[in-house]
Each structure stands twice: as structure tokens, then as C-alpha cells.
Image 1 (tube, chains in turn red, brown):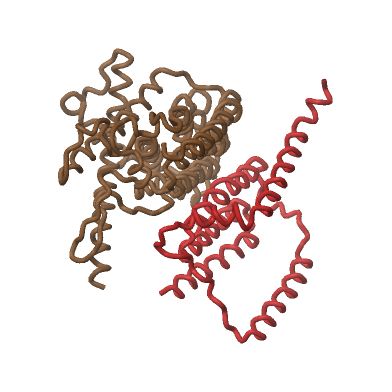
Image 2: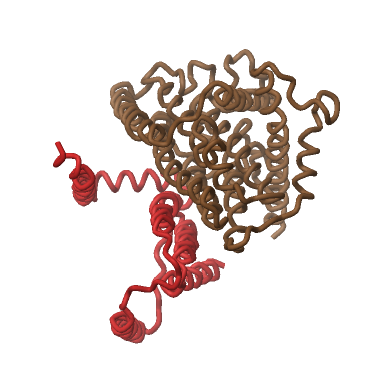
Length: 168
Length: 354
């Protein structure tokens, strides 16, 4: 049963992810991305990481992708306008990555290790576990990440205030 | 296998019951809103259908059901049909984690079953927030797919508004989560047992969340696109905003979603800030086996109070201008919400047993 569920989620994720780059209408691409986010969240739920699943949907589907859609609509990109020339490069990279994947699969004899699911129904929920581990073991990377975000925020503020500063 | 089928049957009947009550409440609200607004404006409201106009929702429903379904020329048919569903489903799905009665577990033929909540998951609050954010897609896509200026402007406005105010909803709730120490709505309700002085909106120690409640209320009015924040559908500027081009049942879906969202945020205010199904005084709660009767009564009473508040605000306040809306959300509500989190966490650290 668990394998079947995993195969369903994996298949849909791969298909939706390909559709994101294959489809010509950017709105459809964004919606395939939405489908993909939901199935990634589904994978998290099967691993008993409900907190990650909810955050996945709130952050990626609820905020980031809505902004993508917002920009796509504001620019109103028509499906004919294809101004990127990345075909040859993409083909080259794709062949390299595929070879690597096949080599890895062959060398390991096609066995895939299953990730260990979280503690189901334990007294400490996975929200608490994430909080504890984030503020003890991974405190330093966590602080670094928040510093990077702060720098990005200050940068955005300066960029948007530039015109106002100079005119004064 | 037998256990699984019993569990399935129980859960399905529970979902059926909750959905039935929610949709019935939606029908009641369409009438109630018009009546309440009328009384506040010294009018009678709908009086023609049935005694005192009480059958008006039935007439409205029949009218919408038999109306011609028009898809405008140049509209994107798939997205145009998908949008109302994308709005209605997230509005209804949130009720799965709302506890509307005591947290009992009864044994039905060897299967554990919680009669007063469909699913007690340990991330209930995040679950509701996640699906609330999905509702924005329906509004944006509906506006875009209609191939109309007014709809597109309405959709874009709503995207900006929903993202801005979602943040305030989330931050207003954090204080409650700190005090309850859980994301499960059942446990948050349990933490507020025993009289109104234990409800998070009033609980004096460590810090009453009343400010957070006001922020939550304002932001949820904006989230549900109600006056004075109904800019996505401002009729004096955008005809009807993102659903200008919709008619018949598709329009009814948007309409039902708006009311279902109102019920959902009223349920959330009740559960998070006003003790859920707990009575305001311990005396007013029936003892033992009958606790569920008063539980459901108090829950319903509180939810209807908040729904009335929605109508009251609509009848009282004029619509904000777009730049005022953005400035208010980011420069007024957000700093207050952040300050509330800082104060609450400091006081919760100093008085850990409050």
C-alpha cells in the first residue's frame, strides 16, 4: 500500500514537473507547479511529516506561486512569445544528468533506500521535534539563513527607495 | 477490513452532517444578511416569498440553478470552469478540523470515533491556513480567464490583498499558539476550559490576546473580501470584480464560497480566542453526558455572534481606497501583530504557569 501511494505521488510529481517546462502557456505551467507542490506535500504526509506538508503548501503554493501568477498576469505573456534560446544547453545538461542517474542506478543495483518515517503517534509531535532540532543542532545554519533573508529584505527596500532618496 | 468500513461509514456520515449544516447556514445567512442590513437601514428587507420572506433563499437557489450558463467570448474555458471550484472547495474543506463539541472518544463496534470533530490532526491551524491560501487561486484565475478588464483588475487586487492579509492572520494566531502550546484546534479548545476568564481573548495571565483577536478579525474580514475590504469586487469601480462575467451556478459557487469562508473564520475566532464550545461560566455547562448539548449551543451562539458582527461592520463602514488598504495592512496591522508576539512570548516565559 505504502509503495503504491509513493509510486502515485512520484509519478504525478515527475509528470507535473515536466509539464511546467513543456507547456507553452505560462498560466498552465504555474498550475502544473501547483499540482506538483500538492503532491510533494502528500509525500511528506505519507512520511508523517505533517508540519512540513502544511508549510510546503502555505509557503510555496500559497505565497510564492501566487506571486508568480500575479507577475505573469501583469505582463500578460502570450503563448507565442518564446524569447529564450536554451534548447541546446538544456539538451546537453539533460544528457549529462541522465547518464549520471543511470550510472548511479546501475552501480547500486536498482535498490532504493526508503527514508525512515517519523515517529507516528508519539507524545512529541513533529512540530515540536522540528522546533527543538532547529534551535539546538541547527541553530547556526538557521541564524545564517535568517541573516541572508534580512540582507535580501534590506536590498529590496533600498532598491524601491532609490528614486525617492535621490529626488530629495 | 470490517473496522475500516465502519470507520469509513462513520466519517462519511460525519462529513455529510457537517457539510449539511454548513450549507444550510449559508442559505440562512443569505437571508439573514439582507434582513439585518435592512433593519439597520430602517427597511423591511425581502418580504414576498413565504411568511416574512423566510423562503427567499429557496427562491434564490432555484433562480440561480435554472439560469443560463454563459461563458464569455474569448474566455479560457477550462480555467473559467475550474475557478469557482477552486474557490468553493478550500472554503468547505477547512471545517474538517473544527471541533464543535466536547473532545470525547466513543467506541463504535471496536472502532474509536470522535463524534464532535471530523479529524483531529496535530496541525489543524496550519491546515486551515494552507487551504485558505489556495482559495486565492480561484479568485485570480477566475479574474484572468474571464477575458474582461474589470475581472482582471479584481483578480489582481485580490491577489495582492489576500497575500498581505494572510500574513496578519497567521501572525495574530501565533500568540494563541504560544499560550496553548499546540497547533491542534482540539487542544487549543481544551486549554481554554472553565469560564470566560480562561478564554485566550481575556485570560489576564500571561497576556490577554484581545489585540491579536482584533487584528485577526480585521484581517479575516479582508480575507473573506467583505466590506470595508471588498476591493476585489468593488461594485462602484469594477462592476462586480473578479466574478463580473459569471452567471448561474458558477456565480452561485463564488457566492456560497464567500459565506462558507465567513462561517469558517467565525468558527476560527470562536475556537482560537473565545473558548470554542466551552460555556462562559462553568454553571452554564450541563454536567456529564449532556455536556455536548450546551457545548454545541454555545459554539453555535458564538459563531452566529461573529457572523452578525460581519453584517454590522458591513452596514457601518465605507470601503477603503486601495492604497489605504495596503498601507493599513503592512504599516499598522503587521507591526502591532509582531509586537503582540514579542510581548506574549516574553510574558509567557516569565509566567510559565499562567
